Image (cartoon, rainbow over all chains, first blue to last red):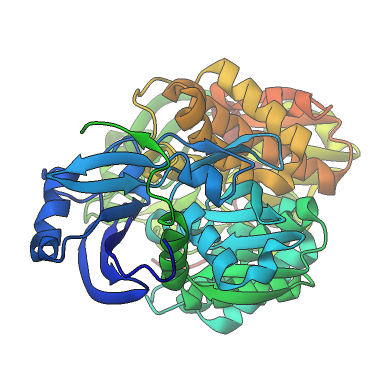
Length: 314
Length: 314
């Protein structure tokens, strides 16, 4: 998109649990609408859901709707094949999946695949757009070798070299925490249901950094034994568990990346703050990038040439 | 119990999910009855459940019912306080909790607590009896420093020195596997519901041994990415996940214990065989001890002096 361009576009961040649509003119957001994630459409198709929500925005004659996230997975609207790393904005733009929705051109951003730092296969979908956005918001990140982290259900650690995403590694930290908190015997020993205590979190980080991330499964059991033996309250126990998992992830990452240096943390502020604390405990520093701002900046970067990509009928 | 003793006793292995009662005379088992675990009594008290199941065994005039397992937890019949390590058979016997059930003397075996190899608190309940039993079944284990493992929901790694349990370390491997298999996104990517494939298991063990247990959380995500990218079938993916978790546990254990040497594996044969494979991949060897036989041998060892322990009214 030319910065002087005043055309109307729709941007969408469509994940498993949430759809967030923006009506844009040039660089301004005119309106915003929220809808269901692709995992909770209740029988409606993604296309129907999308057109219903867009509704009267059509009157502004948008030239394109650009969507990122799980909408491009095989359980979404249409599968946008993973682009292999190394990949920069131009590579991702070249693999946009183009559809037509009742006369409105739609483009879906592909996810990325790579061979990760451990030599294994890895995938992301949605985060690639936030990464490109973070590079636009802070162009200094396009110089040299940089480490970015996108904390979440499946935390992504991303290596960017001279503006190109060269590899990434996924740690299912948020999912492990939720499983242990909701379903495990470990979390059941003590009553209470408060938020995680910051003191417990700090202790968990310190414990796993001191012992090393190889001991994580054994340390996790301390969540239970400290409840049984020391009467640890639930909020402290859950903070401790969260600290073990996040601290273990950061400590393990520093073992393959080398010195963490300054990590760019992209995501929701509360979770990023926990990662920032663990990164500091491992000798690194961090700078936060708001996740929603990064999505918008990434979609802007990807919408600059609408003729790239793969055109299909749908 | 004097080996020449021909008195009648009741032995019980009463865990969270299962009660197994034995009527014994001398060293012979006359009868066996199964009942519900302390976690599934459906409103009945442990005492009522026990007396109902014992029923006409009372006619044989048992001199004692000796029970081990979660029956001695705070959610069981009565709490038998943890005996601290180091602990041998005499220490555990001295802390038996004595009750009276309608005229029948009942003794509950205490669990053990320790400061584990990572300097943290740790607990077990039920396994102490199997460990004592394994030492009786193979008296060579009472000499020198020995490593025993009791694989399960919460796998216990136990150090025995000259016949005394000096410390142990818990790894919630079985629980993590069940949580990931039943509830996680990681397991949902591929259809199918077969048993874990042996090939997948071997690959998971090899992968975590090669990369080191510090990478376990990151390797776990490969279960999903290999399904998405390589079309890995579910039975292989679940085998791979199981191999990562068990292999990671064994590799982490060898990092604190030192050379594994010959590990005594106490438990169910199928799970012990998986641990044996992972131990071999880490350069150790193993010998299997049947879990049920170990419980009986352990209760026999603990019933040798009925006058020890703590007497309470209940």
